[in-house]
Length: 193
Image (cartoon, rainbow, N blue to C red):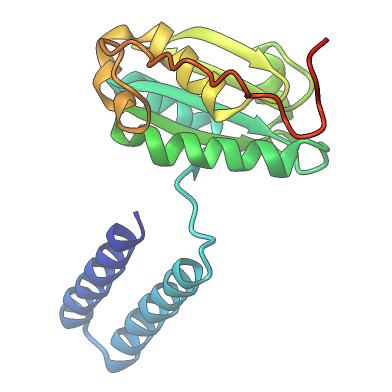
């Protein structure tokens, strides 16, 4: 994921150079190149610090457009930094976005900045996770959740997308291996009666 951000950063610099060539004055060129370089430096620092997010922030309007256009499942995470579960849940959402890759589009919206939207969506507290498919809400969850729970829910909601799940667990066709225990399996100091 970090390499793609570096490529995007390089692309932005190339676009900035092309724009600069089309501008009429030296001041315009200087300003355009300067702002592009600042943005590129910010992205590079974020990548170096490991803080570049896999989850895009979205507004209500942007989300409505996304829901109309997106073919994949969309998972939206309404969060509040004031929530005690925020840091842990944010890590789980980031893991979900990273591991489920392009099969599920994961976005987030800050509850405090989107209270009117939250009321329209039918909730008045965060965290809330909603899943949309083909423009319709198909699942809603209030409260903390783990990556494994999210993965299971996505699997349940979209069984035709199972292939991307098996990279980090055993294939479903392979039954778990059952091993017999040694007769002396008890820990030291523990005896049978």
